Amino acid sequence: MTILYLLPTLLQGLKITLIITFLAMLLAFVLAFLAGFGRLSKFRVVRFLTAFYVEVFRGTSLLVQLFWIYFALPLIGISLPPLAAGVLTLGLNYGAYGSEVVRSAILAVPKGQTEAGIALNFSPWRRLRHIILPQAFVMMLPGFGNLQIELLKGTSLVSLITLADLTYQATILNASTMETTMIYSLLLVIYFLIAWPLTRGIRWVENRLSVGRY
Amino acid sequence: MWNWDYAIKIFPEIFAALKITVTATFVGFALAMLLGLVLAISRRSSVKTVAYGSKGLIEFIRNTPLLVQLYFIFYVLPEVGIYLSPLSAGIIGLGIHYSTYLSEVYRSGIEAVPQGQWEAAKALNFSPWQVWSKIIIPQGLPPVIPVLGNYLITMFKETPLLSAITLVEILQTAKIIGSHSFRYLEAFTIVGILFLILSYPSSVMVRRLEMRMNKSLR
Image 1 (cartoon, each protein chain N blue to C red):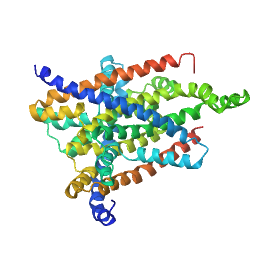
Image 2 (image 1 turned 135 degrees about the vertical axis):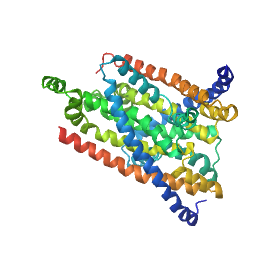
Image 3 (image 1 turned 30 degrees about the vertical axis):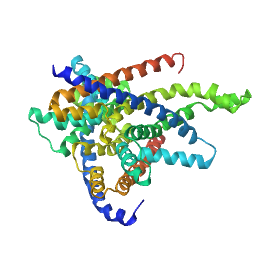
Image 4 (image 1 turned 90 degrees about the vertical axis):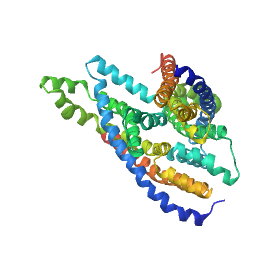
């Protein structure tokens, strides 16, 4: 019976978790492509700046970044509400990891493909859009899939900057009801029930898209 | 704004807390290496229940957040009489979580050992223990060492999570210092920079090792 009492609050937190996951995923996806292409740019400045961004966010820890953006930035005059701070940090962090996925996939497309595009007088944009990206995108899927799961799990950290996500609600419930075992077991199960179908779904898309390719 | 005098004043205290962070990383990693190997081997077990059981366990742990697992170990286990200090709970949490990742790394190494090696072992009447310790692991492990190195660095970057179960490591120290003076900028920036200067050179080293090994294998 305790479950019936606990679930509504937890599901309320789940809603926030899913919203953050979705928004951060969008941001990370855009940043991954921007930074991924930036690191392959022919301009040195662009290459340097994107490499700097990627290495800083990959080289420090997600929680440190989150605390920095939430607690330290206000001292320089930039105050963000918890939701914005959470989405921004997760987006920046996983965008940096994603850029490596994008970069390595583009580099993995055989050089002959670009050369064939040039020989056929394709414009650089058409070369990218119709030759390179369709091939590179399939190679990006496993990497992006893994990152998506990591991002979903990473959202649990926003509970530490007082954002009322799934983990936060569980901590609050634990303090008020002392149903520790039940609450944390439920929490694990709920995360698993969201993440596992996502893992399976990505695997399925991967298989569908790689049919007839090798 | 940024205050140098203050930053220099708090630096030694934050730097000292690095000891706890490094201890948690290395002991946790040793545990993860060991458990990971056990999981990798039991996944290949001919007993179906053992194989499926360990596969299910790996999937479950990989698909749930480390933070929640840490809460579980730290807050739920005392209910059944197992009391752990924040440090040991943190090490066990990190070790278990990353053992599932490392088991996949071992698996790729094991699967790269040619089938003929297994058959040769069988032909020579090796016991399962001998097969693993004398033939499969010595050949399967070296190629995955760089990947293991990367996971060591990843684990190092995950240790700040242990602050959530009240372990006073580097991030928690910075937070305590910050809450005394309401100046978080210097403390958190120092933590970030310490992480960066420790993890970036290590990842460059791992990349070099990887390249060198690829060359020598070809």
